[in-house]
Image (cartoon, rainbow, N blue to C red; front, side, top):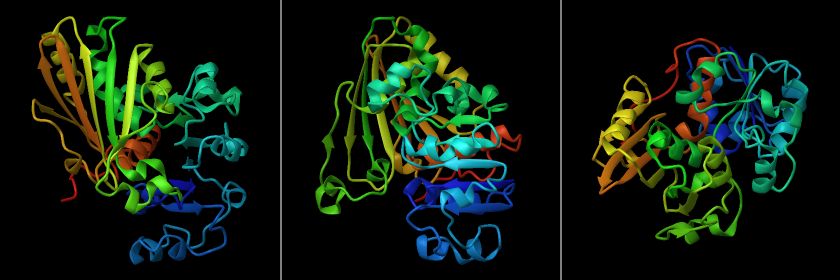
Length: 337
């Protein structure tokens, strides 16, 4: 496969390059970035290994988006911000496979996109043609999709434990989610609250309740309006831990639904009553899910690496599904120490 990565010098784009550099089915990778266009990839991303830069698989010079999309290859990964992603990809939408890691195509309802992002959905004619790329749930649709909307990191870590037990949660019951994210979840940008001195030895909630943009994305997938979602920034480079508390009508059936749904999934690890830890997913495409019961309340706990399963890793998993190669190709399941 020939691949183009837009936004290749952000954290997600850089992770995509690292995964694709050793992917057994990828023969060419073109890196694109507005800010680094015309410069060598070695200068733009010194962390890539010399082998990756010298084996001819990755083009040595970073291209601007227009130049990169003249020959987009088989699939375009867009790791651009919302709004900019749909606009930049417009020339190739419907012509080549696009896996979009922004929020631009994640919503079926335009009013929800507007409430979360303050504007009408960009490239609105493509909204209903996009497949929501939560691999374990929409695998069959991804197989024939030309536009895949890669889920956000918070929704991925929240939805995967919740969806199997949703039938056992009363319709009007509160769904209470507390989520902890590493700093890379905010992207590679200069902001005061992301400085090392501000974040180290410090943790804080932000946009509580339903104010975070991903709350609308999660609610649409659940088709529930009873979500309370409170994210937190914690002093980790990468990693995400989500705890969800819900009442259920039958704990035994809910637990069995969770076990049976994920029994054969290559990237889902059920840890039982042992709470999952972020370090056990670092550098992998795994989601680790633990569960506990308190009276009739189900406590769901999940951990992912926000740059892997929460972004670049899941995007490559979607590519694997779409092109009929092994779903695990190029993706790690052994955690960093």
